[in-house]
Length: 494
Ligand code: ADP
Image 1 (cartoon, helix red, strand yellow):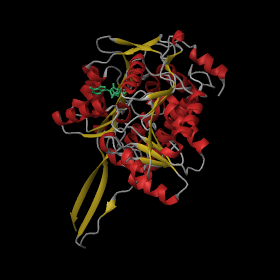
Image 2 (tube, helix red, strand yellow; image 1 turned 120 degrees about the horizontal axis):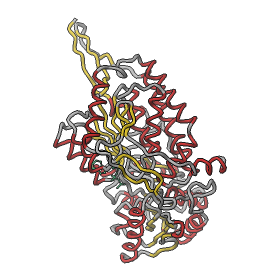
Image 3 (cartoon, rainbow, N blue to C red; image 1 turned 90 degrees about the vertical axis):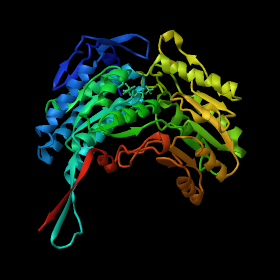
Image 4 (spheres, rainbow, N blue to C red; image 1 turned 120 degrees about the vertical axis):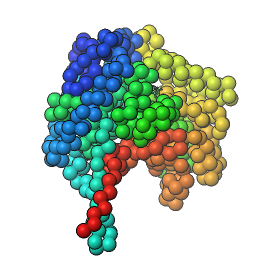
């Protein structure tokens, strides 16, 4: 990555962002706008449309009309594939611009953003583009006078509500399979990270996606998100975000048309280190990056470190050294390891968790503070708290910040019991050189993804989905497609 290019891009003034409805860029129907504040320095960098319920209704109506007349679903698979491949190419061609725009908006360090955002989004769109003409229906094993067929049909209109931590990556996880299967989509980016996703949506039109097939509306979740959730004309709702909002979406569904709702929610993922880990130095470095990159604003972040008691002090010291070696600061500097916290509100919440941990007997080994306040931005030092008991707030509640809680254990059984002692089940890891133990941990820990001797980095070929209150349904891999199709049986008497 070229620092000079990044500096040029970051200095570019931004014009106001609008909705994307029916292929056109339109302001809010009442002219309302919201300031976009950069977490890098707390400055307003542009405005975006503060959507109204009427704006969202217009976007849904456009998506419905586009679906019903078959302008996308009715195209041959090869034609849809071509458009999606072109879209992936355009995302890649504009990767640095998109990444810098996203970082100015949400604060993720550029080194991570460039790969995780446009890089991953392009790969995801391409994956589903390539898959779409390889997905077949079925012929059932029926008696000879019957032909039983199973068709996979698009569901119709998909509502996709996206969070602020990785808007392009997570947006693509929903948009890729939804559009590949012929659906229309109404996208609702997050208040504090809409810009890059809005640009990415515009590129879809440039790639040849017909107007109305992808509409995007910015604004408050409580306004436009709620309208989307309550719509009688949305068939499937897909979401990544907080448990509280996930719960509301299920309510909206129940109160409206009982649309299918797929949720990818929070986690309190255990990173479990045994004394027989193959390389404790490596494990410590990965444990630090597994919670501190992107300031801990990663749904699968390893936020609970469970350490075998025999190596507790030694290992915590290693993780603390790794944490202290991470450069926190301007996310648009290529050598920054940890960028800004997304918003002042989130930063305050993170610091609040540290205070609670102290009152519950936790000891702050490193970090614990807001730093670089003179920049005007929102930065927090990577924070490690030891002495976190099983039921402590830090062991039970998702912080979504750079805060690692440490709990010792004595036995494998105790490690599994601790790992499974939250309402969540999104990710986890076990570090051990004992093959049998590794497999027992994979089986024993109740979670959507279990790493062994690594943390994070699972690519698009494998599903990501939570159990328990971490959600339902899977993003990524061919399994994600199931969310965006209806099975229709044809039972034909011959
Ligand atoms: P966080 O607390 O991490 O910001 P949220 O769950 O509040 O996560 O936000 C994730 C997404 O959900 C954002 O796009 C936000 O606008 C949207 N959202 C928030 N509240 C609602 C709501 N009541 N209905 C629909 N969407 C919402």
